[in-house]
Length: 251
Ligand code: 13P
Image (cartoon, rainbow, N blue to C red; front, side, top):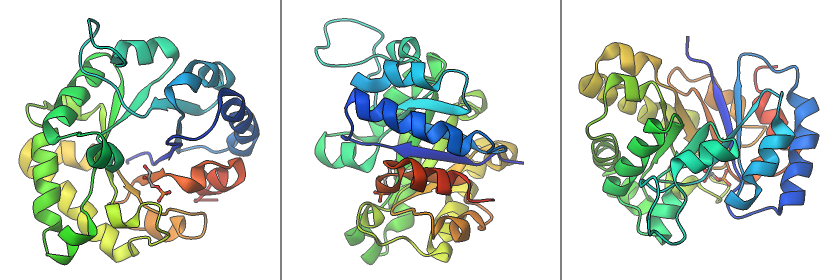
């Protein structure tokens, strides 16, 4: 019912040459993969050349962030329509690293996601608790605030252009994956919350990805959970063979 999404967040890695080289290696490894949406998110400077390299393939392109204004005196920012112009269909919004290091808030996430959707992009909206929040039993409170703030004013039509990524901060880049049950518990909470906010059919249709130390050897277990509809992959998305193995989780 929900097509799985396997997305690679390359963070601040890869030159243009490395990025195009990677997707040229990746394409034949996933050419036969059906029933899975595959997405890669290179740095801004590589987007357009990677878009050219991906042309005609079954791999889509995402940016890692955007601004909410269309144009103007906003030095250093990139508008959603420029991401479309560069060849993107998706954009990651509110990654925990942006929240942690760059002052991203639920309010800026909300503005960015709305602007991205208005420009025709699919917004991959990230939420997740820190270790301290989990240990203080605040996981659900934190996720609820992030979703209510990040998706404030959204309509059902906007949710159709939205993917949620649950990334527990303590599992990112640490090698500590949430267990299948720990991840499923939060995914089910997110889907139930979305049902109360937007109705059951919207909640049934939305894809909720898990992120945090996803690797070829743990993806199957995660994907076997009812409410896990894909993965947002960091480290293991940087190499074509490991990312292809994750995208081919069902094979
Ligand atoms: P890792 O897969 O390296 O833990 O990163 C997860 C992530 O932050 C993806 O956005």
